[in-house]
Image 1 (cartoon, rainbow, N blue to C red):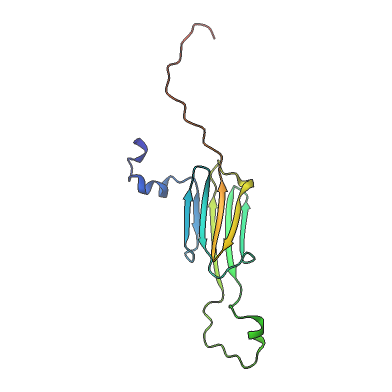
Image 2 (cartoon, one colour):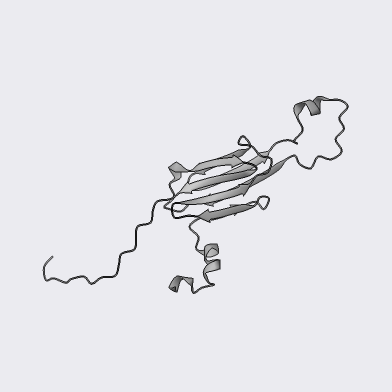
Length: 143
């Protein structure tokens, strides 16, 4: 209970989280932690796997970027002379975030998957060893 005194449990992840992150405000992200991994779910609507880049950079930083390069019209629609575009708002969208991974992250086992406009990144982590139980240590006169 001693670690939850300051601001209470709901606010602890904002200040003492094992992952530090910064991102552009254009995409929604969920971050879940299980005993074995961190799971990031990021909305990347209209983006396919070729539009999304997930890179591990120096300093154990995970960089995630998504950029959709053109409007959703097909090449044939662009080539037709009788097509008139009245509005093109769904074209270029980008997203970027950087996440500093915790020391116990298994960076060599990170997996990423995009499906139905949601990018899921799974960052496995090393199991945390159990805390030693309090005990009395015998004192001797010789080591």
